[in-house]
Length: 494
Image 1 (spheres, helix red, strand yellow):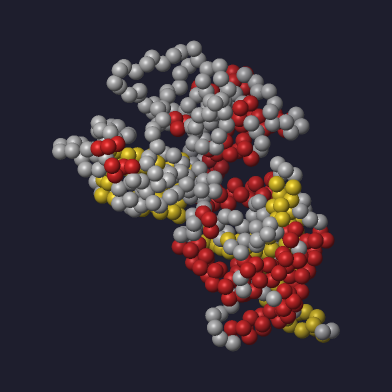
Image 2: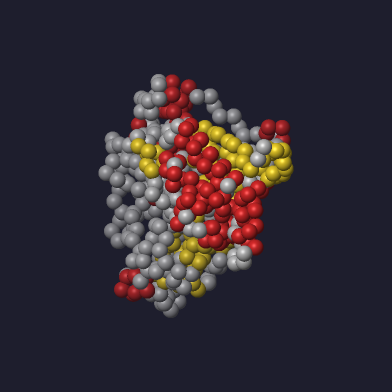
């Protein structure tokens, strides 16, 4: 007899909490194999095809294309094993979760084989036993035991799980609502993962809050209220909270949302989600947490351009200008390792990193992304050129993996391709510095005591002032400029 298994949206890594359905790859009734991609989703990092760990017949899909789902939400259900004659494996009309035919694991051995393609959130073993879901109850009430032989009724999918009466809330970063993880202290009912992240980034303990939503649900307004109160008391984030009724009375009623045609003069609203939302969050965090400073210098890049032309004229793969600049960066970081570091706020330590994982800004149709070249310090100009080309093509195709978009230790931003001379880069948190390169253009320049037309570029370095002072940053930038003006300087590091 067939067993109907539910496949949920897995954790795609790097703290991602939701994904948008871009394209379904299967229909209800299709037969799928183990590890066959069933849906294409877009996260804040990249476009990803999600493989299903079960093989069988698709009995239901959850979510239309364009719908954003949280991690842990159902994606599809699959009937695994040969169904008995006349058995119906589809969901009853009006039901969100397909009915599961009676049977046991021995009747469906295929269900225990699992997947060989592991994503975070599910593995290769047998599917875990389902944890019974409990509908939140008002304090002082009890839930009668289910009748013998019957399963407890599952709550609605969007019902938040309230803390047990008389208990305290525990913390966690997993999905909230009916699937919230429960620990010894009980769950924390939070309206969305974004609210949980807002609290975590500001050092706010959710256990100290009293939610003003239904059944004590913690809303974004509750977190913002607590942060304002903490700021007024000198930065304490565990200030006592007023009673929910008093808080509601103290806050003005939220005005009704105006129609899009009249709000803010009839402007168009564009949701901050996907890549654009991730960029907004990361850059805002960088400005909020990192005390950055910027220094810049003009450099004569004439000799660098001649050296590149000579390399390419000698035959073999063409060397890109970005690869030469990257090689200069890695040499400069070897001399000034303070800028290849990160700050551990909890330990109050600067962590200097042993490897240079070089990020570079790439503009795509989906927005700005920063692919990472692993171990850039160990690659020559030819190897860097090939890796830059591969990652750039993957970025434009939207096929970069989360691992190729994270883990950078220093970023090189060539904004000269946009026809601009200078900029003040925003550090790619949690890195400590970013080098910006403007366009290379002919300009009047004093060369060997005479005025001449030379190829000039502006270089700018934004650095975290906690990891070093201006002398170190200036020394790094001056070395980069010297290598640009006299590429032979690099020979000392080869």
